[in-house]
Amino acid sequence: MKKLISIILAAAALVTIILLSACGKKDSGKLVMATNAAFPPYEYVEDGKIIGIDAEIAALIAEELGLELEIKNVEFKSIVSGVESGKFDIGMAGMTVTEDRKKSVNFSTTYATGIQSIIVTDSSPITSVDDLGAEGATYKIGVQEQTTGDIYCRDDYGDDRVVSYANGATAVEALKSGKVDCVIIDNEPAKAFVKANSGLKILDTEYAVEDYAIAVGKNNEDLLTKINAALAKLTADGTIKKIIDKYIPAE
Ligand code: ARG
Image (tube, rainbow, N blue to C red; front, side, top):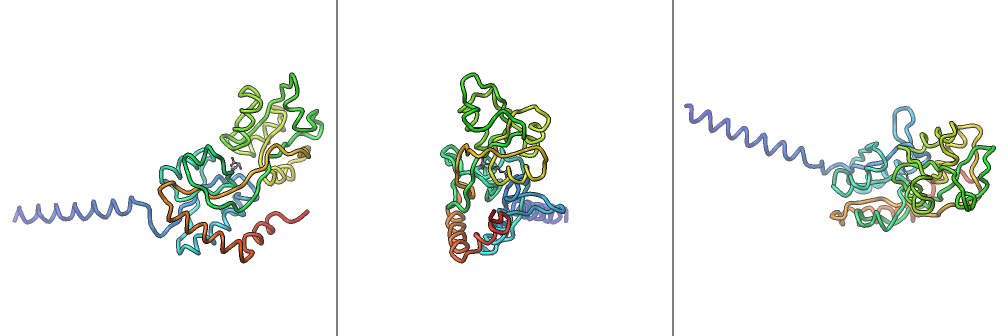
């Protein structure tokens, strides 16, 4: 009898282990997307929900793939590493395609363009990007940690001139309180921040032009192919343009 009980217990334990390991693995019915939802109009929180261009496009891609979209709101700097390690299936965050990131993840075809813009206060002595690089200039530049704005500014102006913040909104707060002299961030969030805060403006000169794409794990070629097919379909039928136009009305 004792032996029988221990056999049953051992079998039960085995079943539990198998079930647990199945749960621990990523749920194959889901598409887990990492983003940083402080980046309007691409992703932001409204009424407790993450909405925006990326969230809408991702929902349609998930639908095409027959998967349920799950969006995780994380720090921007942990998106690429999380996709690389397989913690997230995709990273979609107004993310610029860069050679450096390509060493860690694959990128889908691009679905939007971004421009790095410069935000200053209305009374700022900075009038163009050239002022930042002028001989003897000491202007401090606020950026969002590990974004292309951060990376390029450190290259161009040196670490001493650049202050990184967890998100664009905190960088803008720092500009308003005089901790930095300008903020360099993607143009659409820049417009949203300027609209939401008085006393700020965007300079006419652009700092960099870039392409946005979806990051996918290197060992996930199959998913990348399917995402590109979904993007191609949603581009061809005008859906992506419609979503972008909804959030970025023509001026
Ligand atoms: N385009 C820039 C980059 O890739 C900034 C993206 C920031 N995105 C965000 N959701 N916070 O570095």
